[in-house]
Length: 368
Ligand code: ATP
Image (cartoon, rainbow, N blue to C red; front, side, top):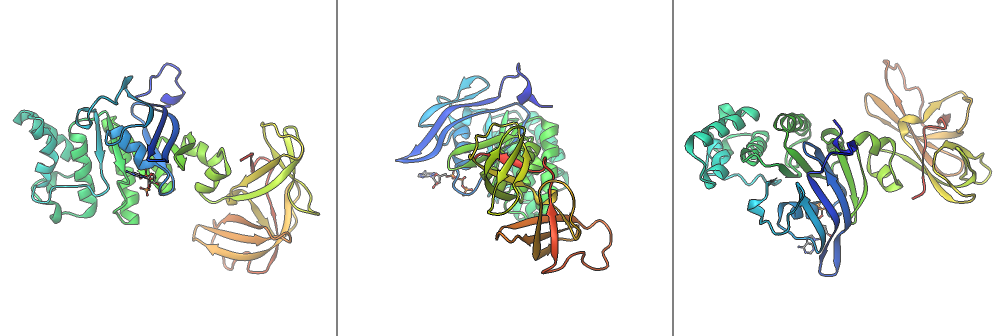
């Protein structure tokens, strides 16, 4: 299911050249973005990059300074927030403390003056969907944080919005509960078929839940792609660095073609990488190499991109270890190794002389 690859599919949401300024500060800078029905879409970026502003424009709490936002082909600017087929779930959940779980979920439906039977059916469905049947009579203070989060979700979905906006929905939960809840969110999104747009600054969360991720920086979209594309084929050093761990080596192209030779340090052999992009001689380029693609060994391996260094630091993480290897040039390269078998002793230790290497296809060549 990849609606963004289907030529005939119409996007549910379309941002066209959308800019938002607060005074002379540009919070959103000329954004073009399509989001499709049934997507679980994540807006990811550091604090202040404009994620919430983008979402608030969808909800109708802010209006674009320039550009148009369409929902199902209609410009939403004239539509007031409460008449948009959009709902927003806030990080604080904003549950009514004096109302029961049942009444909290029913609140929006009652306000819309739906008949009693419809409300009862819908609330029951929502309780079932979020596994809250047993807690229907309790008040928010009589349930756990995770359960409160589910009440907020049930309440936001009760009116069957086309689009649900989730602003850091799991921010208040501890790590373990957060991880469990991510899978629940994915399950609920799939069952209801509602389009979810989630705002998060947690890259692991975005990568776990989302069908596509938009990485933002300073009001701009840096890359919009599936999680695996973002990780395997980042479009810039910024994105590569923002998502997961990465080694970045700056250099100059000295031989071009499908195999780029990159000069990167005095007296060192050029590094070799495969790319389909064109680089001119002497052009600055960056090699982005994930630590798990860097092999570490005691014996000199054969092949391209072999460098010698010394173990500076070791981070043991149980399933994997990350070695920081210092090269004579001063560069520190991270190499990760899976701890697959029980290791009686560490394979490498501090100050060991080691070889690191990576294949020609392991590095992503970037020009920015
Ligand atoms: P966070 O993760 O911290 O919530 P964010 O990516 O959601 O950050 P936004 O809340 O969208 O960021 O804010 C983007 C920028 O716009 C920030 O620099 C913020 O200070 C500014 N901003 C947001 N709302 C207003 C406002 N009403 N008036 C002036 N500046 C604003």
